[in-house]
Length: 366
Image 1 (cartoon, rainbow, N blue to C red):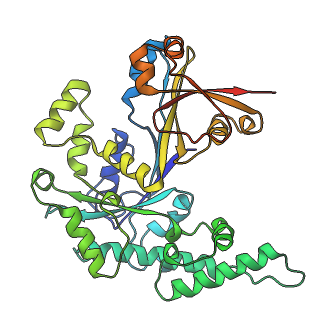
Image 2: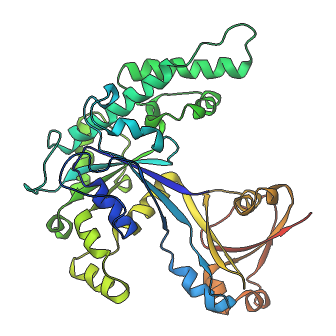
Image 3: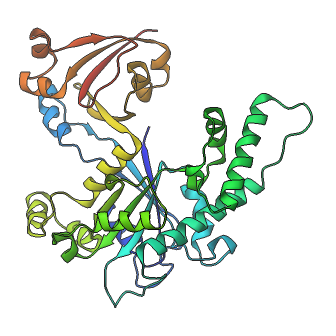
């Protein structure tokens, strides 16, 4: 499985600049006017993972395969997008299968960049969320009530449609609708935008990044004042997209020095991916051998056979066992053989719950 992030926001909030910075190259055309992104931009970036570099010489390979994140950047949405205003609404279909929606809101002060929206970060977010709600409502209104000989699954799905449509007509996003478990499963194929988990990126100034204040908590408080609850501090990341774009021009030690001089502990990409993994309940396990060292993304709580299925779906059915060693032990002892001699390699069965940092070799039958 892969993590995909759909980037939304008003024009000129820095979405394409952020996209460029995340990809460390000018893939999206960033310009100082609305609708600079006139077609969807898709970028796949590796998940930063220093463990792969450490493991490679231990197992004698030079091939490193990190987990990946797909970023999807669409044209800026404006008020009335659901009725055809602007360009962004044309591209909403490109983020319907995203794992999470990332709302980029303007939190920087630059009079040279044309401002769209109210200038209030929460009001601007609500503008976008309303347009996503209206797009979802349009999807639901196209659904047809089942007639004739109706299967139970069709009845459950229609019940979900009615609940969701009623909520959206009242201005309530799909993620806040209380559905039964079977209704929730039935509604997945609707691909509703407001049913997806959401995160926020405050695109701010370098001075704010370096200040002692906490704009994230202030933003969450403002959301609460508007009746929007359930947003945790980990769901909001603060990034200076302009600084991150400049950072993309540095590598290695120069990049680290640039980060230190800017008072930043890690890059925006690292911050955003860590937050997205936490928001979606994801983790990584590792495989390490002479062919390659690779990181794989799985849900927290994933059982060993399902983790094997991420490598190849047939592995679920033919799973026998998993040889497991924790990363720390593997590195300290110098690989599979020494770790096994010290009793640090375990054989786990079908009920084993995968843990962050597991290095695994799956035993698969025929």
